[in-house]
Length: 114
Length: 108
Image (cartoon, helix red, strand yellow):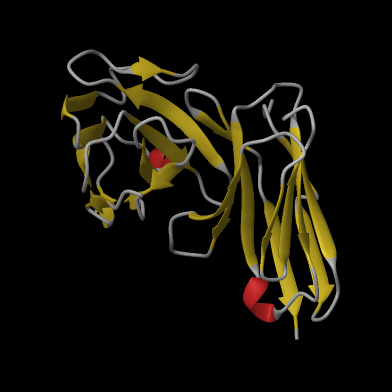
């Protein structure tokens, strides 16, 4: 298994600003992902964070808005840029260990944009 | 359009009743996972099913993976108020895609 820590856990942000969310895993993992969960909805995959190269983004998400870094096998960041109230969501980091089938989640970062 | 169709979306039942949640897709998955999420928390893994036809039991919860690995069901026997929450199915290949979720309310 993997223990995933995210910070900040919650934040209230001003419109037009950017915020970087950090994700730390307690063991080396093969794959890391970032999801968004808008109020009352399910999880939507934003991107796969690739170590040492550009993230792979899903349709509807772009690097300029959600730049992602993954400098090593245990750490990743997601930046939400130029925030608007529509970006108010839970942002979740997840990771897959080795060749296992299970993907584990952090507790999420709850962002409110005012 | 959701890759995984989950139904029902909302379910409100009385304590002691049984219920089944369905998760269907046209895609084949290497594994399928069920999560439960409570307000203010991240999703918590309940089970991973890998083999077509596999059945797993977790106390009063029974999970089944379809023979073709495209669908799954979650059956809860004698539901309790503590079962209230958002239940999410997620199909995994290289990444993981989620269904829309089933919001279950169990009334005492």
